[in-house]
Figure: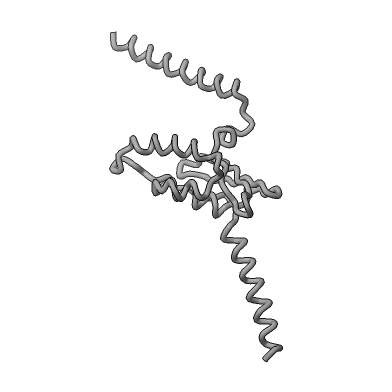
Length: 155
């Protein structure tokens, strides 16, 4: 009896540890995070993100609240597992939406659990404030130019 119990106990312990590791992977955390946003479940989104992410999620919620349920379309996405990079307690997980656009998510281990770091700094990555402002100004200029063209053709 003791000979059977020990191997069963060892196998059970190994299975328990490997299943726990898989259920709290960076990829699964990002999947849960995006699905929570898709379902407008802000508490679940916050549970899968860092404390610093709350203000960004509140802003996203504010925009989402302006869209009526009838006009809301959840984001279809897939995790690109082969691009995931884990470096100790940090990871970068990539997803791709239905249009082929890729998004990188910074994921951090907090108290042994993976959490999405959904802050402006994490989203913008290495972009400097100057680069962001330049892009915004270019976009505004293009919009103004196209508006001028439309106005000129209406005269």
